[in-house]
Amino acid sequence: MLILNTLAPVFLLIAIGAIMQRSGFVSVNFLREANRVTYWLGLPALLFSQLAGSFHEAGGAKPMLAAMAAATGLVILAAYIVAWALRVPGAVLGTFAQGAFRGNLAFVGLPIIYALPDAAIVGGLSARTAAVITVAPMMVAYNVGAVVVLLLSQHPLSLKMARPFLKQLATTPPLIATLAGIGCTIAGWTLPPAVDKTFAALGEMALPLGLLGVGGSIMTARLGEAWRPALGAALMKTIVAPALGWLVGRWLGLGAVETKLIMILMATPTAVVSYTMAIEMKGDDTLASGTIVLSVFTSLVALAAIVGIF
Image 1 (cartoon, rainbow, N blue to C red):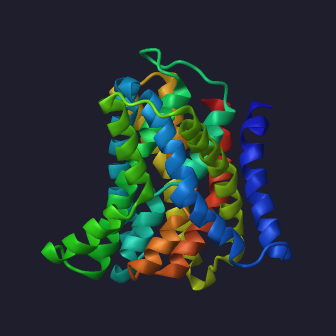
Image 2: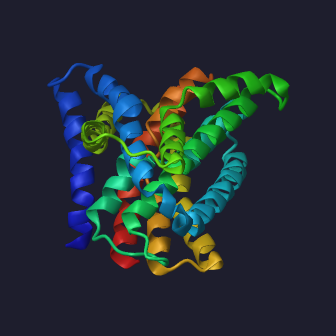
């Protein structure tokens, strides 16, 4: 029952989004626009409100953040090895690597963690708070990593990469919200009740609306002949990544709760924004969309095993 009660709300919302898109209940662009609203307003509000109230406790989440960062680095390295084995063309290596490591932490990972019974980790920090504190900088790291691997697919490493790299970072809402939340805590500021409630309301819409957008993207994605590398990237993202998360967590001596949280976050399907990023950075949009679709299904199996066993 724990597996069903934890995963069903998340994947049922994804299914509802897919049905809404498939049936024509909403226009082709509706869920895409909803995802844009979530990305620019809902998610930043969630990150800001959580960090502004809890960043002073961030020290307790440092081991989790270190484990996830190290595991992500190993996934990127493994992705290039697997891509070479699958003979993925050099021009789309970045798209393959991005799909293999860039998980949907906010719209899938956090809802699953919030559906689990909350628990205290080492140091007394709430598991949910620790997850948010871990997710915020990892989303920034994902943006940095995605820009780097996609640029390296198109250009040799040089100073010319600096401009698009910095431009992408400067226009990333989660990064801005993360820095603002941390700054608010460091400065000792307290938001007026009206503003605080506004951010809380915007944050509450982020997770369900984001899941509906994931479902809608499934109906508009294309596979074609890219199914083999797409499946490879999806399996890297949802099977290899959490396994590496477990290994790193054990090596660093994380507790059972922290290790489980890391594995859940590492097993989330490929982030929908990776498709947009692939288009903007001249990657392979077919491979990107195929990876997203297949990773949703493979992550269901992986997440069920993690929630039920660990």
